[in-house]
Amino acid sequence: MNALAVSLGGMMNREYIWNLSDLKNVARNNLKVFSCFSCGGGSCMGYKLAGFDVIGNNEIDAKINKMYIKNFNPKHNFRCDIREMVNKPIPEELYNLDILDGSPPCSAFSSAGLRDKVWNTKKKFREGQEKQKLDDLFIHFINFANRIKPKVIVAENVKGMMRGKSKGYVSEIIKKFNEIGYKVQIFLLNAASMGVPQRRERLFFIASKKDLNFPKLKLQFKEKPIKYGEFADNNYKPINKSTQSYKIWSLKNSTDTKFSDVLKRTEGRNSRFNAVFLHPDKVPQTITASGEFFRFDVPGIPSAKDYITIQTFPQDYDFCGQNVQYVCGMSVPPLMMKKIAEQIYLQFFKED
Image 1 (cartoon, helix red, strand yellow):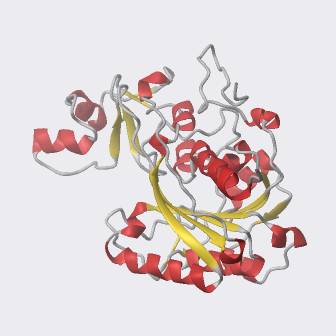
Image 2 (image 1 turned 135 degrees about the vertical axis):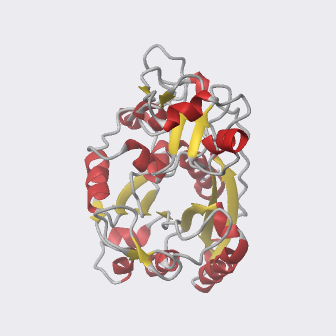
């Protein structure tokens, strides 16, 4: 049995419910990974679950980086802008990487493929973070890859990059990979088909050095969907009955997925699009850093444990006082990256 399919609180064994302490039971494959834009370490945990050795990270946000250090104690930690990594002194070990991982911030791309409003401007994700120009971070990430020449590069982003005006930027990225000697494949994957209890679609750019002649990667995942009711935590926060949110919740019907559905039907107005219902008989929708989530079965707000489970973060992760939903919403689900990393190992690196 998989050592990570642990039992918590009398629950049946489930791979998506696990602890950081379980990582000690994972067989190692001796392959090295370095992660850029590491945030809470979602990708890093995925590689660790798949047996890789994550030797370090790069993260610009001081508080998020402190949290990362607390949970992972990285051998090589760089708290800086990715632009600095192109010229900053780095250890020799980074020139012998098997995988360079990164999730360049994607808020400059909307789900409709629009990029005009924040394109070519500096912004920050939240109060206290240093401002960055976001739209060219992917290119700087590739520039860093060109410096250290890893065998494989894995980059995650939103599916909005493949739509509308953003398509031209994707072409630029593909061209850049080719220029530095890498062949790249692009996969649109849904976490719900990968053992993650969440409908989260993301693009993955997976590039390998041309001179290594790795085969074409095949990624097909068809795992059974996991519904919210299979793990929902009863320790939810009740909705205040005097609020508009409670009134809207009270007017819902079985077909509503968002508060906007209720308001359009009852008041004829379009608003509260980011207020989402979690139905017990459905796979949860994408957990975002700033959206609103409400349980459909009871008038309540999901617990922190629910966000952790939906994102497949470890149950014993130390958030160091950071907002759990924010960290989870900004991160790659560990189990999603585990499934990808396992296939990269099996199809690229494992010797017969």
